[in-house]
Image (cartoon, rainbow, N blue to C red; front, side, top):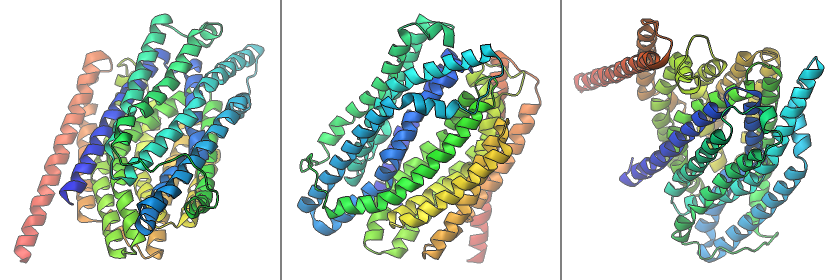
Amino acid sequence: MSDTHGRRIASVAGGTLASRLTGLIRVLVLAWVLGFTPLADSFNLANTIPNMLFDLVAGGILSATFIPVAIERLARDGERRAWRSISSMVTASLVVLLLASVIAWFASPGIIHGFTFLQQPGSGAARLALHHQEDIAIRLLRWFVPQVFFYGVIGLAGALLNVRNRFGSPAWSPVANNVIAVAVLVWFHLVDSHPTVASVTSGSELAWLGAGTSAGVLVQFLVMLPSLARASLSRLRLQLDLRDPALRAMGRLGWWTFLVVLTNQASLYVVLALAFATGGSGPVSAYTYGWSFMQMPFAVVVVSVMSVITPRLAEHAARDDDQAFTHQLATGLRQSLVIILPASVGLIVLAQPLVAVLLNHASATAALPAGNVLAILAAGLPGFTVFQLCVRALQSLQHARDVFFLYVIENAANVILALWWGHRSLSGLTASVSVAYLLAAILSLVTLRWRGVRVESAVLSTHARRSLVASLLMGVIAAAVYAGPSWTHGPLLVLRLLLAGGCGLMTYVVAVDIGRRRASTKTFVGD
């Protein structure tokens, strides 16, 4: 790995780590302010929908097609002609994002009802409570809808910076969003320290909560402006040429990507709707928090790797350099799995105390739904990682149809298993997600092999096997240490968690070191 490549990954990883840490603080503050309550479910549902809409309208297209098409134009057409094409791509994306935001604002009531209709309250009081919960979600969603456009602008800015091999700003900018969101939540807590659906129904603080949350996304874009100014984008213009070949290529590839995102969002819709229907104490919030925690290691490691290798994969694909393409992808897989495997095992073993300490006021007297969700999702994290990297490779090769069919299979498996296991069971619902990604990971490796890209050896490499063995030993030691004391509250629970985590980490480091020494010895003897 070159020094430049390493520095880029380190920069992106540092920014992503800061973004995820502040995002984790945001989740912690949100749980502290709203807890696992109907109000929390209304907020989390309304705040998830703009992300779903953005992904549906433009998010997948921007990440999957914009960078490969733009880099191909720059390689083949030169700067002047390429930037005319890129300008058309940017302008068309902005128009679509604006129209989608307006439509979503007017459709907010129907969107919320679509997520809650499976809930069938028996009594009149329960029906009235559900009506109030839906009303809160609709009002919040209308404040959150502008995020669809803002996220689109952020996605475009990040894609343009990546085209210029600038990766730091997109990774660091979410920190500003998280800081503002935390400040808004703290203010909301000071105004209403024990908020409920009833207490916020008639107050103006709900509007401030919604507006402040969306303002954070706007600020996230504004902090990217200095990097955009330094990125040699002076040829970029707001102009639209519907006959431009790059725009047509983006549309052709984007059509398949749109279908992919459509299947993704349909699957997520089923999961969230079924989660809402399970009832109990904030099932949507439990799933949302568990997913956020699982995404922490993935975002810090895998997203950083993908951000750096995607332009390189696109360049190798444009030059038909199959050997360099395969080597780059295999390196990314090895780098990711070496870290993801111990993170996955650690989260499986310590999910309950981790959630108890961070989200339940350091109380672990009973199993928490969010802890179950986190442990089950963590089991599927390696499969999720392999699948996402393989998909990015297929997108760089512009095999959009392959990506579509892989996602159709993954999401169909998720929906079928969710309907089978997830009816009235949040754990079964979550298991359907992990199993579906494991299946998709295997199929994606087979698809790449069929396309002449053989990287399955990277998944089964010496580094990955060594990390897996060390991770399993780490999990056994961490579980044994945690099972020793019986502390379930306060600082003693925190100490119990830290002891288990620390001993597990030391075990992992020692096991990896022993594995390296044995490998070196065998190599020396063989020579």
